[in-house]
Image (tube, rainbow, N blue to C red; front, side, top):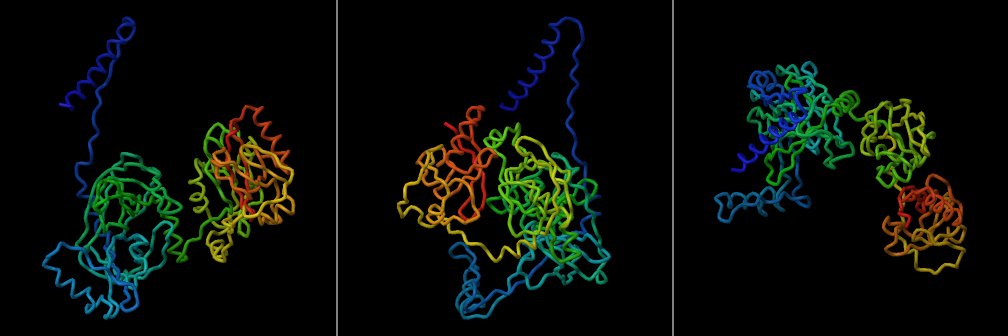
Length: 506
């Protein structure tokens, strides 16, 4: 009934359009061609037959500690199950998995695919082989071969394995260009989840550039081709038989496919796989900046017409990148010729760039577009340095003492004071931090909404440096006269770490 009503509504709309056109007289005859539904592929049997032998099952084994170690939980089952006694014996105190038994082996299964038949190179997900003591590759015909882990990357969830190509005839598949794939294109997923042989599912690309918060470089292909447990690490093919993604995750309350699966696009995966093959690790570019999203408030404060780009909140000290031409407050809109539409895009684009490369970076600085040059460092080297850590004592009791009353002003719900030695001592502010210190924040004020806290230091407002509370008042008044609704504040923590906030000017 509802379908018929909807169909009638569409026909009525078309008819009304034709009548409306005729009321202008016999100037032109409007003709609306019929819309033909595009047909899906008649059969993918030939394509699947050609590709299925390249897809493998990846089986792993891991030793799990017994006494004094982590125990394997007993599976949940209905009361009175015929397997209850068996599991009681196995998982109980007398069983191999219990407190009195030795360590036991746990196995897991996933999928993978061969990309180099001559060298025996197999690609899978990192989470399939993570913490494994042994890795075995099982082929569609039942052949099993031991595999060596050449390299793995937790950030993109990719791993590269190597098997002996002389012990089995290998079929390899080729990577395609995922950037050419469009929403609505047909795709085919092949997996080998339980070692029983290859399984084939068909669907379309439902969305692109999906962020599911699984890592710093999320930009997944979403598909409704069924991806079930055990299919992780398998390939997602286009209709030319090229791999355009590596199946890696699903969203499902039950664990089965509900038509929401995700694949790592080859535009991201290929460079990581090449590095893992060559070096056994990744070598990502590193710009050495802290960034924030460009919100509507930030764009309005900077006089920008759109929210595209990444706002530089500060430069990272001790990094190995030459980024001196970039300044806090710059908005990066292009990096090495590639557009930066959001702050989420920049880390991925930089990471995909070669270490040591000198690149052009387009920034918006004080309303003007500029091009600056930077030389990229290596992310992994910075991460090794970062393991030393840095103390962050911003949770100290800053309001336990009553300060001497300095000359101060009230602006935007904040009480401000000059940053003298007394203020540095009271709030434990580093000697290299300069600006105007926030001594109090009025509850429910515009500043409180942005979580500005006593002890933070205002470094500049609207990309103009401030040295005194009077400077802050004058700058805010100037922005009001310009018709600005928000003030963009660069704030420094007591250790000098910078961030930007926009505060409403009431």
